Length: 330
Image (tube, rainbow, N blue to C red; front, side):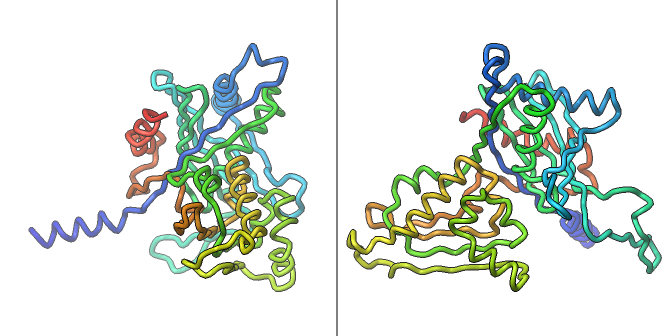
C-alpha cells in the first residue's frame, strides 16, 4: 500500500512542469480625432473583439509576420483565442508562433522510427495570457514560454491590429512589473562596478537600432565573424569597497547603464534580447547594490501537469488568485 502510494506520488511529480508567469501593463494612445470616443481600454477591447469575431464568425485567424521584410527571418504570429469574461472584466487569450527552420519529427508509440510532420501542417508554439481591463489601463498576466510568443510579440500584435486594421491608436506604452525598481537604480546610482552581459547574436536585432550602434557593435562584429551561439561579456571597473573620488567615476559605464535602464523602462521589448544582464553598482550612500534584469521581474511559478491542463479556463484558474492579488495593489 505504502509502496503504491509513493510510486503514485513519484509519477505525479514526474509529470509536473514548472510554468512561470509574468506581468506587464499595456496602454494605447488613441488617434487625435478619436480621443473623445475611445480610451485605452476601449481600444484593447476592440482589438480582442476583432480577433474573437475573426475566429468565431469568419473561421480564420489574423496572421502577422513580425519580421516582415527581413529575408529568411519570419516570425509569424496569430491569436487563437480571445474569450471575454464580462463580470471579471478580463479576457482569456492565447497566441501562437509558427515554427520555422528544421522540421520536427514524431516517433510513433512502440515503433523506433521517425515520421515527418509535414502532412499534419505547420508546427506552432502557444503562449497563454490573460488581460484585466478593470483599471484605466490593461494589465496582462503572461505565461513565459521560451519557444513561444513573448511579451514583445503580444505588444507588437496588438499595436499592429489597433493601428493598421482598426485605425484607432497611434502608439502603445508597455511597462513590466518588477520587484526591483528600475527607478530606484536610476535615482541611486553613483558608480558602476562591473557588468555581466550575455546574449544570443540572433537576438541583437531586437534591440533599438541606436542602442545597437552605440553599445553592441563589437558584439555584432564578433557574431558575424565567428558565428558563436552566445556572446558573454564581463567588465570590471572598480575595486569593491574602495573609496571613489568624483574624478574616478566611470562616466562611460554609468551612461550606458542609465541608457539601458531607461530603454528597459520605456521600450520593454529590448529586455527580450538578453539572456543575462547583471550590473553591480555603488549607490549614493556607498552601499553595493546588484541589478539583475531577468531576476527582477515580478513573477510566480506553478507546477503544472501539461497533459491535464489543456483548456483555457484551466489555465486561468492557475493564475486567478495571484492575478487578483496584484490587481488589488494597483
